[in-house]
Length: 337
Image 1 (tube, rainbow, N blue to C red):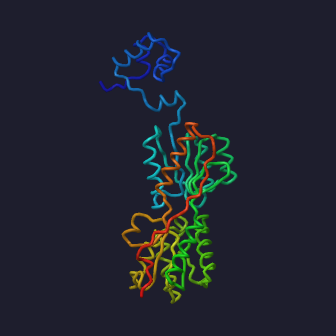
Image 2 (image 1 turned 180 degrees about the vertical axis):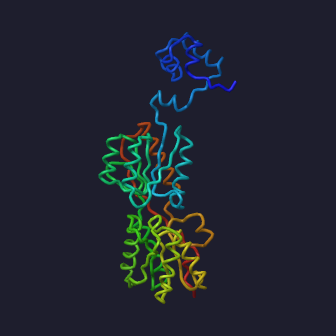
Image 3 (image 1 turned 120 degrees about the vertical axis):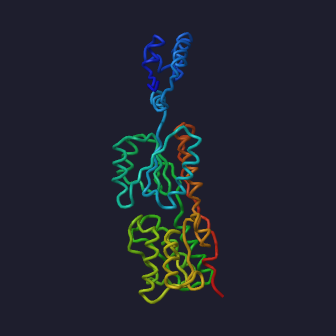
């Protein structure tokens, strides 16, 4: 009663070859109407349910979308993945997540290609090196880059420099003078661009850059975009015996750790020190945290839709765009009277 009916039983029942059943299942025109009726009758009598993956394989349709990502436990990547998931509902694809890690994503991506498991690929916050480019070209895999750029591929690039500049400009316009930043111990393109934009804003507004107020935590997990790194950085200020009037954190997760450390030290935000984050994760709203919104969920949707167009060959032109972030002003950077 529980035996799974296979294509072999269908072929035997209909008195045809297995290849004929396969052609009927894939709606091939090279089968007579009479044969189609015989095969369909056998399918109905045996209550045969072909595996979707087998049908796709026979028709050579893409089956598996892979998202290669340095981490899928951080809020930034989670928001992008939510956008991918929401758009993927419109596509007949399964999804696999591949964690490359932050320290050597190139080697991880190469290992992934060696497995040959993906029909389409989204690379999230992974820069395309010459080695990765070579593997992408040789595989012919449709690919879209998110938060990285390369002239040979479709990409959605987040303008981290602009986001960092907006953060610095905001804190200056709020009237703060001793302004610091919590950066990351492992320098990624994103963290470096945010810091560069932040410093340029201070320079353009003729503000003194206090180098000693630019600190990093010791934790290198997720390149330092973590609560631990934010927490440790605040205690570095405490060890120096001086705090900035306002501090820009490289992301909202760092800001959460900074909040906790300040609370343990008996300091309040923004009365004693103003805090600003980056990413606009959901929790930042409930902390009243001023932040930079990268439109992560929207980017996930757009990148997946772009990949669908590539797969369907509806548009061969490269789509390469830079997404400008948005300042979300809240109470954490309100200068005390």
